[in-house]
Image (cartoon, rainbow, N blue to C red):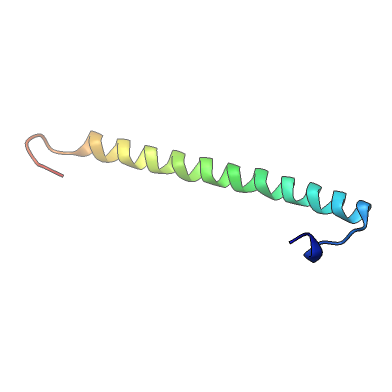
Length: 54
């Protein structure tokens, strides 16, 4: 796999920085999606009628 990457050190460092930036954005998007799912599940439990199985 290393043959697919440039051997130019500045380019590798730029790629590493870009990768870290996108990983942070992806982690934030995952956290937001998880929070929305928890909120939706909480709203569903709060509005469920007693005695009904969901």
